[in-house]
Image 1 (cartoon, rainbow, N blue to C red):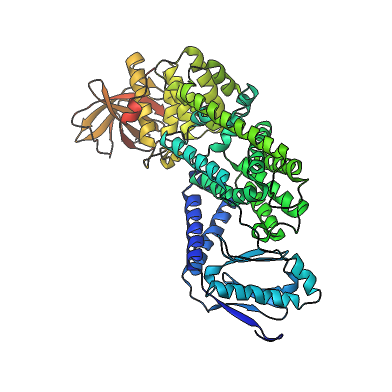
Image 2 (image 1 turned 90 degrees about the horizontal axis):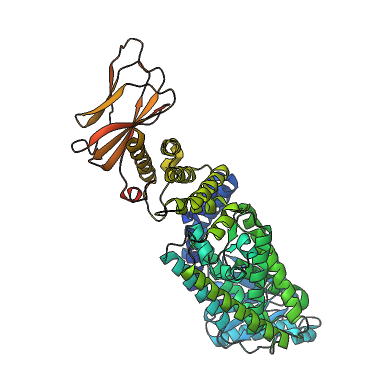
Length: 619
């Protein structure tokens, strides 16, 4: 062995697998963030999010550097009073007097666990030349600590190897259930539909108040359309769930998990501003609160090294979650805060009398609580399945009315309700009245093109064709419509909207003829010349107008053309023929008629009919 003043050195292999895993995880997280429509929408509206995006982009070359750089050989060095430990791209110098925990594990996860009040780390045995080298490093550190003043006392507080806990099957079962629920909602087209989220068990205040308390737990198994949402929660459950289950025992873990899910959902229902909520984060923050209480308060300095988290790591996680809440306003902060507080309270109730961790034999109240809350979770999932199979949202007038009149109903839910009602084959007048109210509330809160389209569709189904055409023409001519992409499809939404307008105009023509907007001139006619539209004006045009030309083959609509007509120059006398520069895809087979004339300048465009929009019910 080296002398008292001679450093012991142990060569470490570079962990290519670990770096690859971290690099892949980082790149995957970045991809999920930037592919997430919610993130892109938030980034467009908030400069702070762009700053975050720029910071994340800087991480990409750093991940590459971490993965591919070679660097100098890494060495763990134990000197007389300190330990030099290579961590990633840096070398940490740790005074031996600061080491609070040291364990050599040779079981399922062999390696060296080391803990200080600032951080905790684990060096896998695979990074040493052999398991014997790991043992030698462990003994060298202990000998150096023993040589310090009060070294014999310090050695006694270092943890001896303890039995590795069993398989965390409760955490694994919950993780599988969450991923299965996400796969089912993805396969069934639930993601992106507010009504379907309600059907599947989303936490909605107005329905909780009606007695559907099963949603408090069932909603924790559902997740938003973004893969980032379910991905982050799955990682959080795996990391905190395994630790909590092994430290507290299975029954206590389940009591904290489901109890926090209920508490967080109640907090969300009581304080939410976003309408309804889904996700396991309520339960995860409960685990976070319970672990925080156990490690920093109840068992401070007594938690086994392999399960210990440093103070700085706890504070970093708290700061990170606070930052995410600020950067992403859609995060349900009330659910997170109340879930964490609930987790702390349950932990105080169930583990405050325990003498050590891991808990060998949970108390009777912990076992009863775990069983009862697990049964409540099973029952909640059963009610959710029953609701999925049997509930008809369009046939339940009472629920529809409560959702439409709900003062906290988010625009996405109101819009979804209105459009779903308006596209039913034969909705009753009472439902159409509710749809109209929902559409108006949604437009007041979010006058985006697709929400206005819903309002136009409701007006169409109620027989107000003039209002429907006016609204839909506004949407089709809105530059924002060009950015729309239909959910689930990589196609622009404008042809769908234009076909909606085409349907409305055709219905108006069948009922009352061409619709002439206020102050629009009369005496226009249209014909096809060399595959282009020629519009003849018999009177002088004083202000820009828009002419909407319908093309049909028999009774079947084929397309819609929007032609701008500019004011007639002073030196030109009527009649004037304006020829559109756009070639018509249906010029040889279609008959064309003017269906709508409105004032105002527009962009010249031609649309072929979208079969999906044509298939929607008529007025």
